Length: 230
Image (cartoon, rainbow, N blue to C red; front, side, top):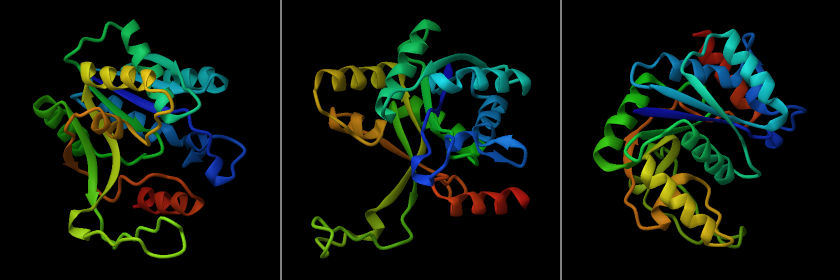
């Protein structure tokens, strides 16, 4: 079975908003609904679990019902970090009878333009390799500065990629790394692929695209509007 987790529990603090960015109305729809509709319509997705804040749980449930998101079978309450939110989501999947070899696709609701091809390729690659990350080649030279004043290193651009979501794993693997992370006090990584690598798993690449960008700033909202208007 292929199960999608849609993370919609962020605060939107970096945008200076009064409400979480996933609930910003874009063309009369909340932002999170764009990715959710794509997941719900995808032929390879069997079930969806939506993770949101306690304060917005009822709103999210109402929106899912109103827009007939029939593959949404469960909800989870997010934590103080992305890592905690995913862990809570995995616990929610246990209540739905998830199996060890099920494919778990984890996507950020702030990436509204995820494509059907990206979803399909994640699932296919995960069945082969058990852990995959969606990436795009870096088009810019990346500068490292440890002290934030001078350049420490300039890695070869041909070896660098920009990480996106979905990140996709077999359930046994992603549950294993999150349980180990709970035991390793103070371990914080930025995403699930980082956890998998930390605990010795290989993570393989799935090619994303630039349309699958993350809405983080108000300029990103303008860019999203341009794409939608096309």
